[in-house]
Image (cartoon, rainbow, N blue to C red):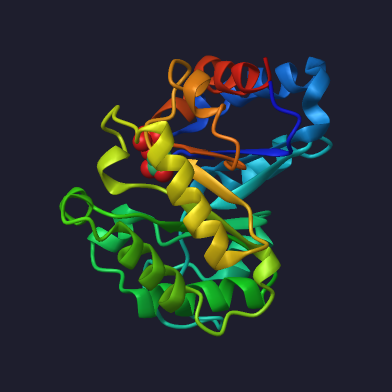
Length: 245
Ligand code: PEP
């Protein structure tokens, strides 16, 4: 059982519609009855289309809402299809995920990620900053170099670093059902904590109601970024319950 303050961040990716939005009612109901709720921080990151509705639903609850990415520009601009951090704030987002591997894989560089982080922090969003190595980088045993580089470049000259939460997400673990060995994860999280000092460090990658029993025992993890399993209220609630029991 943990007495630590833990984060549970739901990354809905490009899933979710008005129907699935109803599933969060169950989570709200569960939280009202959950004894240890004072030590929980729950953040839902739905697609942008649901941010407004979700933040209205979560009024008077302790659940907060975040976005999954943003444009690096702080001003309004003729950029078709883009959404800047102020626009996200204006519809109720308090957080934004930046540097997710799915976006790094589709071309986001460390430099671009750094601009996004700076823009988001400047308008008052908190940033869930994702880092992680690919399978081939892991096999080459260069995980530490990769993580150091992502942190150094992605957070270069970032002000208000207390508004950054790090999510360590090994790319080979996302959506695959495979998680790192506990001993390995402990060491990697320690390595990251050594670099960032005062930031919370979460783990993300195939967290589910089964493996949470193993993951929750890793003492230096401050919470979880949860993709697939966060879309079903029952699984999400189970993960939370089992973390504390
Ligand atoms: C993610 O995409 O951030 C993630 C952790 O996904 P999953 O839980 O589905 O592996």
